[in-house]
Amino acid sequence: MISPFARSVIDEFGPLVPKPPDPDKLETLLLRNNENPFGTEHCRYPGFGNDAMLKLPESYLNWLRSAEQTHHAAPLALNASNLILTMGAAGALEQVFKAFFEPGIDRIALTPPCFGVFSRLAAIHRIEVVAVPLTGPAYDRLDIDAMCESQVKGVVLYDPNNPVGSRLNQADIELLLTRFEGLVILDEAYVEYSRLPSNLRHLETFPRLLILRTMSKALGMAGLRIGAALGAERFIEPLRRVQLPFAISSVAANAAHAILAHPAQIMRGIEQFRNARDALYQSLASLACVSAIWGGDCGFITIRTHSFSNVVRALRACRIEPLFNPEGLHDCIRFSVGTAADNERVIRALRSIN
Image 1 (cartoon, one colour):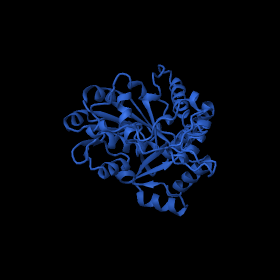
Image 2 (tube, rainbow, N blue to C red; image 1 turned 90 degrees about the vertical axis):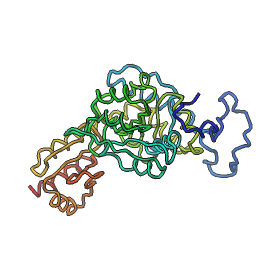
Image 3 (cartoon, rainbow, N blue to C red; image 1 turned 45 degrees about the vertical axis):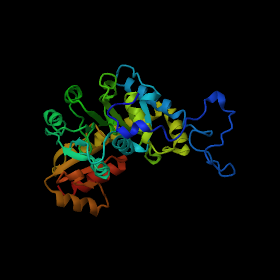
Image 4 (spheres, one colour; image 1 turned 135 degrees about the vertical axis):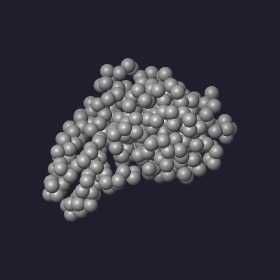
């Protein structure tokens, strides 16, 4: 059974690609995929050859379980039916738009300042956007009354937020999930960088919640372009029905599966990142040109400066190119976290204008 929130046309669809045979039936001769058996080592479609595509969902779920245990969270009751792998987190949201929102009819609430690609995707799919801005000095509070009164079919949240980097107020998230009667889509692209738990724990209690993840950020696999959507099976099934065939390549699946086999190594990389981020945050916060700073719990740091033009000139003179005025935040600059040498180069450039 699929969710009644799905578009009516979805009921008529099945998956575009039939499931591969069970492992105990590998002797089956498959002559349906129009492959070239005389081609390269990559001649088979993902999941139908000797690749890790069939194992990748479970290896990713195992990573999620181990990551949540570091926060002393309850074990996650998730299985492969609660997960679909996608082309990055943005690809996951595009599938959500295609599966659940009727073009020219349905509306969705976004919470600026937020990742601009999502409003662009909404425009491409002819979904009207209702802006419900974040509030509070840390951009971490939700206007729940406005969301519930907006007559939208869904709400997209970002936790941590991009471009600010704040974690959303957890009580606000739980209240919204309790009161709002539509879909809640929660982008957690940067959550592994946080020292706070994720929102995966809400999936069992709030079945209208969909969580978007990516392996591009903290897991260090940006070049593989793999994301995921997680939720109740009846919400994941419509996403399968709108996904184009073989969305994840065998090359990416093999590489990701091999990396996920070493969760301790991934966690060491995340902890190294956190330490570099914390050091950069403290250095930036000490500068006279910085009037506000955010991102101590995310994958980047954003500052506001009262000397914006001078800061821009100083950074560009040192051939440093962060993101200026990210997502419309005026007089602000978003810095990705680099190596110790990279971060020290940033601080030297900004000290030159103090």
